[in-house]
Every structure is written in structure tokens, then in C-alpha cells.
Length: 178
Image (cartoon, rainbow, N blue to C red; front, side):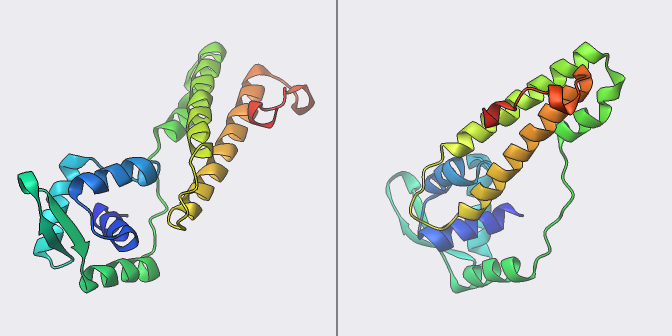
């Protein structure tokens, strides 16, 4: 996914917005699937305007520009959604640490997995607190994140049980199921 598509999608779904508004939308909604800050968003908006994908609808005080998606921009989002095959390869430091766990002694490996598990738990808690905003935008991504978070916790619990030498029946119930 590109920053360009994410910005066009937000503008298409929510209507005209400033760079600041789009950055705040990222923080509230897309932050768990795609991260971008002001320093990335503003230059991309300028490029998209030059490419005819967005237009400056109005300019306010201190140079604040309100961008609106153009028909060409809306068509680019639609084409990307319908035709683009998402890249399945993921670079994950968590997965790399899981891969390299056998290099550690038992206690250190347990500490690493407990730290990873705490991160999963924290992310899941944030996702579980996401309020419904009444729009359908983001609902499916939120459900995907919740499912992945619960699955990641299950992996961590199983891995900890294995590292501790517990049999499946000896395992304590995962915290997210208690």
C-alpha cells in the first residue's frame, strides 16, 4: 500500500481535508496498518496536486490548504483496490526474534516472548477500545487487527508453554480468555 492511496482513500471517504487533518486521521484510524507523519503527508499532497489527483479547494490563514480528491484520484483508488495484488511479504522484527529464539538460553527466550506477548496484549487492548465512528471505513481492517492480535497472543502463550516445558493441559488459560 502506498501513502498516496491511503491519502486518496481518506479524502474520498471523508471529503476535503488539510494536511493536518489527514495526519490526525492517520493517527486515529490507519496508524495500526500504515504509519505516516506530517513530514511524509505534506510533500505527497503537493505531488498528488501536481499529478492532478487532488486539487486545492481553498487556502486559509497561514497557508493552510484544503485538499479535495479529483475524479482522476478517485479512479486511481478504485483501480488500486480492484486490480492491485497486495504484497504478502511482511518484514517483522517480532517474527525475526521468534526465528532466532533458539540462540538464547531458556530464561532469556522466555523473557523475550513475554515482552513480545505484552506488546501484542497492549496493541490488542488499543484495538478493542476503538469506538465505532458510524462509518464503514476501517471496520474490516479493525476486525483483521483484532483477529491477528488474538492469534498472536495464542502463539505467545503456546510458545511460552513450550519453553517452560508445560504440557498443553498444564498451561494456564491465556489472559485474553480469562
